[in-house]
Amino acid sequence: MELENSTEPMEELDGAAAEAMPPQPDADGEGGEGGAQSGNNAAGAGAEARSFAVRDVMDFIGKYPEFDDEAKLGELENNPAFRRFCGSRFGREPLSELYGTYLELVGNAGRAAVAKAAGRSTRSTGGGTGGGAVLDPAQRAALNKWNEEHPEMAMTAKEYLGR
Image (cartoon, rainbow, N blue to C red):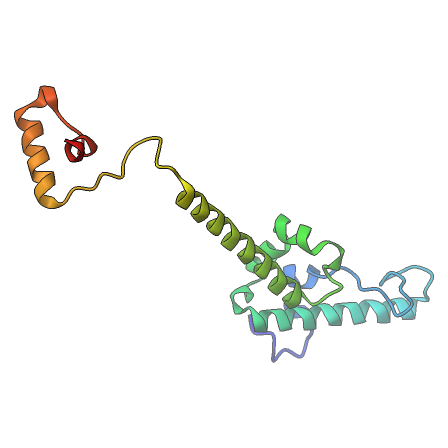
């Protein structure tokens, strides 16, 4: 998507990128388009909001080039977890900042889950099912030979090590 050299600010972003940002508030805090404003001010505010959206998407694509496709940008926009994270900040704060914070939060949650699982496994008593019995190749060969010769008294690796 070649947007940086475009002279038409919005025509290139007619899909998800153009609609990625809701109307921005005016300087007086009122809604971006319409309201009690005159038609000329509303058009100026709408153009300003669209200009912000275009610049914001361009900055975002510059920082995260994997989203240079409108479909991928649309996927991010429609990602329920990302939209829930953004809340009312979506369209009011730069998308690249929101996405960076989102990635940081998701990454921290993943690392915390891995650390928690690792902590549980180190505290494990080993009771429960199975394994842990590791045989070297010579022991494995001897166990297999025994089990072939005496199928009625076949042993597991754990039983073989405990004899």
